[in-house]
Length: 244
Image 1 (cartoon, rainbow, N blue to C red):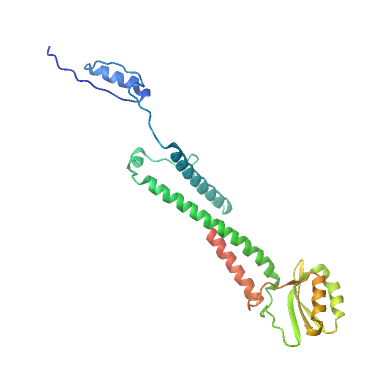
Image 2: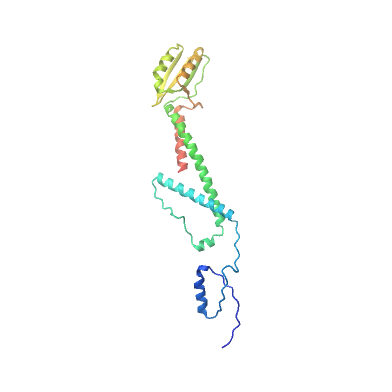
């Protein structure tokens, strides 16, 4: 039988596949096996773990935000959501082939954070618009500009007083002979009034208004009450659409 010169082979494999590898080598009948310890030729891997942890944390945070947003949207609009319970899966070949995976992931995280910041600003503005809309509702029926111009002899004011004070206000303002008022509209809690007074009684009129919790109209940009209300309503609907 011819003798063939032996070659030396260092084989590295996963420890949990050791038995399979040894059995395969044994079946060849062409190997002489000398076991090394599992650590004899091993060297500890070096990696920037803190950087990797921070990167992983960013990805997980973005995924969590996306998941929460989708769940909230699905619940609000009663849409069935088929979100995977344990994240998503890709094949080994897809993972190996994704050379730009980190770059794409970075862009995704950046885009998620941008959208969530935009959502936050949009939600804050929507809350503000709804609050202003509630104030403007009582002015919605006013078809004339809410900004009243004084004349050389008369002073004009438009605003609200609490509804329970209506009767007492009428009595108090009635004691001023050079002052006049008109109730324009009302709501559950407030009365919208327009007051006119001669300049000689302007201070007394202001004192009466102040004593009854008068709140001057905050919309004095020249638009009518109807225009102010419709504009706010349109903005509210626009913001709700942006959020969706």
